[in-house]
Image (cartoon, rainbow, N blue to C red):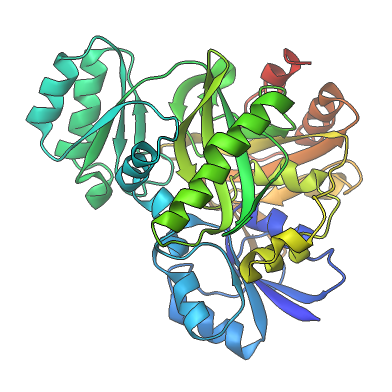
Length: 421
Ligand code: GLY
């Protein structure tokens, strides 16, 4: 029996802790720093790697890292040096997410399908490049920018503005000291997440995120306003192609770079003319995708995360998934992804039994027995259903029972999946 320390404070980490706590091999699940819904919270920030290591050592924990920031700071390297069990990629492997330039150059070097691009640290040169093109572009900050460093441009003026925002005004700080200008590929986006131990990579269930703030995919990008699983966007044939041409090739090519990739490899895919292109990599589970994916997982998550960290995934059977669909509707505070109110009391959480839906917490905190809002994305209401439509209905029934003053959510989560049935 072991204890587990989940690092992070979002809906993803609540879902990871919930699923891990169902393992017969786990005594306690701790969460650092956690949120108003997670159990056994430990007040250590995700950047405090020394503090987390000390806690994990003292409490004999296997550690599961949720977000990208501690991975990019080398939490896995530190724990490994100390002989502590930990799940996730090393700092070198996490470069696939922590430097978009590193990732794009890697993709190009190994012939993994992605859009053509150029790298700039000079705004004038970037503008000249945009002027010379006869297609629209996407402008990306190199470093981590909490999901906001990617600007999809509809014309050249928007591209000039994006260059100014990232490179001149440094709206994302040093993450924007270099940028990528890449060809905008249109099509349908989906998330393909695999679990690797450095040798093999096994697919998680497919899913589709809803990144824009408003219905019908309008408005600015967010961290994700909802997700469903599985998605018909990724047909079995396309899944095979992504697994072979993108995931397996990435793991192999990382080895050629001298890097063993252990952890979740999340490929943000654009399907254009039936072909998959890598928009970006994340080296962790997606949030909110994690929530519907884990609701559908029948196998013991801990067994798989432990095997990933030991390099023994090939010893385990394929992951078993419920045939049902799952839908996660993110409840946010009005104003997100910009400024929003905090400290508003959330009502109705007690009206939703686990058999109807799981309410995974993100930006919440507890105070005197009340649950208050504390972040932009506040809750992920996640329901299972025999059909995608049933799961959508179940999630929105639960959503209606929850109230707070600035509650805001999309009304169309999962709708775009219905057209693939
Ligand atoms: N939902 C997108 C992400 O996790 O980055």
